[in-house]
Image 1: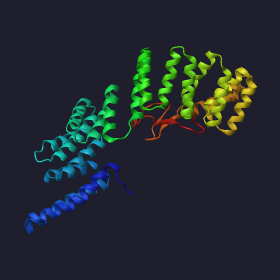
Image 2: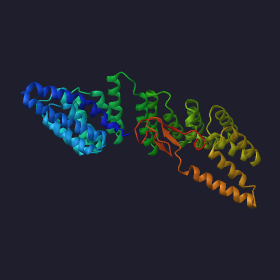
Image 3: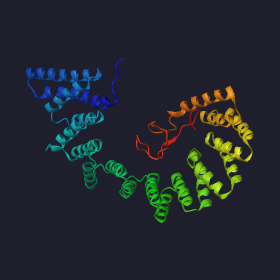
Image 4: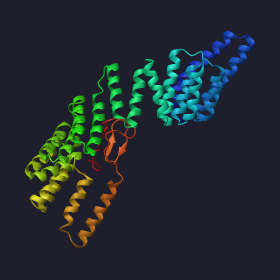
Amino acid sequence: MTTIAPYFLPLLALLLPLAAFSGWYIGRRSSERSRRVGVSELSSSYFRGLNYLLNEQPDKAIEVFLKLAEFNRDTVETHLALGNLFRRRGEVDRAIRVHQHLIARPNLSNEEKTVALLELGEDYMRAGLLDRAETLFTDLVAMDAHVPSALRHLIGIYQHEKDWDKAIDHARRLERINGESEGPVIAQFHCEQAEQARAAKNFAAAQAHLDQAFESQPECVRAYIVLGHLEAQQGNLDAAAQAFERVATLDVDFVPEVLPPLLDAYARLQQMQRAERFLVDIIERSHGVSPVIALAKLYASTRGENAAIEFLTRQLRQRPSVRGLMTLIGATLHNSQGEARENLLILQDLTRKLIEGQAMYRCNKCGFGAKAHHWQCPSCKTWGSVRPIHGVAGE
């Protein structure tokens, strides 16, 4: 059975009642003979266009509706729907022309014109013409028209340009207008600034940005991660360890992100018992395999290979994991010889290939998969939505 593409549905919703209205309108304004001809032609065109939509022939459908929109120049909604359809199909140039044509019409109301301006700004963003989009959205804010939408688009532009000061300023304006907190997003912007300052070894500026991040979101996981790296970079190892430990308290899913620097801090502090206590606690509170692998490696150095293998085998029975199996194979290879060793090498290669192409993280908003963690989803641009994938092939 043929299905209708999602981006056609808004247009269909407009066209069906518009077809009925147009028939009535023409019937009221024409003679009996002209009415029959006009209604027949208009209805025929509408149904022909709808048929093209239903049969997944969008190019032919669009041409029909463009002619109808030209025939009845008062159909602003149809023009807007057509422009939106063009943009969703990737035909941004055509969307821009439709919306520019609308804006140039002298008989538009202020509301209709501002809607068309908002749509044109979105066209410009889709085309990568961010300077033009910024000008339009800034004008809409100045006109006090569609301010929340315009501000969100401006924030998106400034994020893309990494102009974090402007992004923060506009997020605070949106917060004041909507009355809803933008704290988590603003905290992310401050963390971006802190990361830049830390990379430049401007530690005072980095700390100042982190203070602002905590002010915006007191329990910001990312801010604690950046703080841990900042303290470690300055040689404050105990403070770094405390910051990373705080991450585990706030959100255990981010433990894999802090384990390497945290274990390094423990080692340099010569506090491996503290490391063992931390890992044992995390294993009891989470189902991830990263702390299990880390504790197995710690046991290998403190209790010997056999103790590590025994611990890892016991854990894998409770939480099957391809990554854990690879670690177990690697530990067992040291004591294997001959055919047994060859078989283990083959198994190790197979398990490695099994997880090579696997996404380790997924956005819980749009489903985007990635092998590395991103604070902002590369696909839907949502902050803090990318999480580790749990399961046999994941965390």
